[in-house]
Length: 229
Image 1 (cartoon, rainbow, N blue to C red):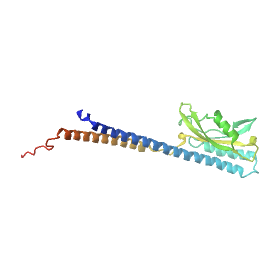
Image 2 (image 1 turned 30 degrees about the horizontal axis):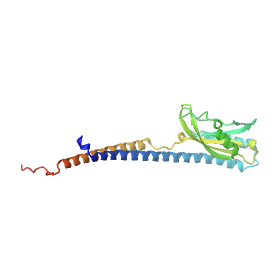
Image 3 (image 1 turned 180 degrees about the vertical axis):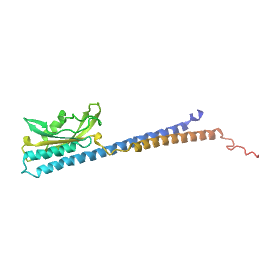
Image 4 (image 1 turned 120 degrees about the vertical axis):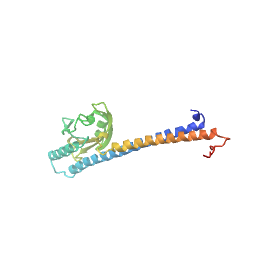
């Protein structure tokens, strides 16, 4: 391995630098794409909650029980969406009680069936001082997987006294994303990165060998004798 004893051996680092840069860049791009998809999912869910609020706020004359029936139906429909958390809470005896059912499939991904936003003090503080808002909490599911839940909440109707309002809460996480990057696309890109690194490494080694041959023939005829057959 004498050919690697001079400064040309530094060229061997080039393929690894290219590999590290490409892999890091692709990882960041993938994370940014998934974050954008998650943000789009979150906005979609919050808009549905806003539509519920608009329907409640626009009709002051409708009795509370009619609003409650519509809110329950709309929220339970939202909760049926893939890995989306949605619930309606109502004041009973000074406490907020959930009046909707959960419809998540416990066999799909982390178990969010028993997620309770009131387990988080920051959420309790937020809803106590704001009519609506969003918060991100760290949730550890039953399978011990920690992930972020992006929660949106809204009190409604705002024209009612605070203790007569409904609290609608909706949340999504990375597991709520249904439009994901295809595995063949990610796998294909990683394969191309590895192949590119191997080809670059082979090319560098070839250049070093050629340089070694050139140096070994310095001062002599670089070309072989042409023999007449």
